[in-house]
Length: 198
Image 1 (cartoon, helix red, strand yellow):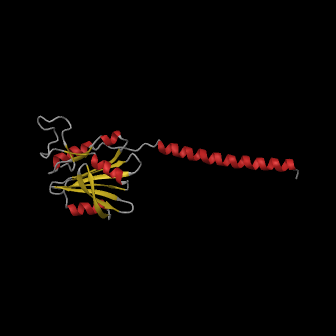
Image 2 (spheres, one colour):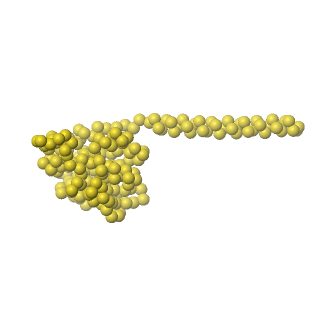
Image 3 (cartoon, helix red, strand yellow):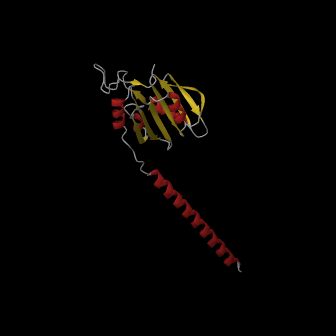
């Protein structure tokens, strides 16, 4: 084979290899672009929050809409109320970093609530959030923040990192202690307390 033929063959092989690489890159770029544009189904959790206010014997805590403005998406809302049983509500969020966090409140047995929501994570101390102490539970793939209030247990948990769990805990807003969903007489709009506030 002549030198010219060998050069042509080498160039042809190079061109084929380059074409394969470019094709792979284009496919990956398409997949990434498609995933980035995925629509995450969202739910309106306010109706369940209002229903819980009508049923619960404790001040209801609701995630602030600030989370939505920061790119969080509410993906689930589960309300469990019964005339003679516990009143519990869980709302799940897809986080701004594409992870997941679940906020749960319940007046069932606190130990049972903590055991179920922490999923075997071990107690690892406390974390200060907005001046209040939350119990921190940690495992390899699941973290949780727990706060036991009078008559209700609050849990923020999920595979998300601690910064995101803390962000949810910071964004919780608790109704006035009188349990009224309506603003108190003389109170300014938004004059509700924050979960765990002193």
